[in-house]
Length: 127
Image 1 (cartoon, rainbow, N blue to C red):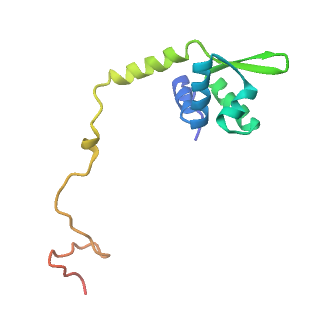
Image 2: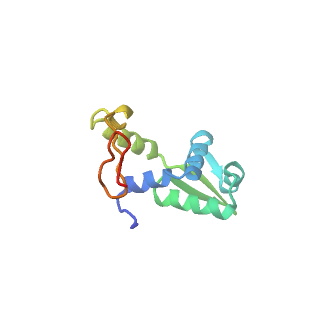
Image 3: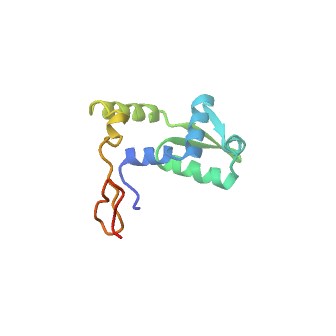
């Protein structure tokens, strides 16, 4: 799949991963977090954490600042507003269809045998 140039698609794709969402949630609650602290909270190896942070940086969700040998991360100031704008845009499209509208409609069930002809209700079929 080709990478999208749409910044909203990149942001939502970055947040769709559970580990990256956990990182963003921690940044939301703690403000600024050292990269070394994410490995413990997310139960991930440091190289994996670095990969997730890179994806979040490229999506515009987080900002990293080097302080000596450590990199401290924080949420980009506009990321919450971007997500709120996306949610408002989706909400303006009208109410979502209820889950019941997606359920199969009740009706007579007729099983098809291997040859594609309907099976008679009496249980007979091709012999």
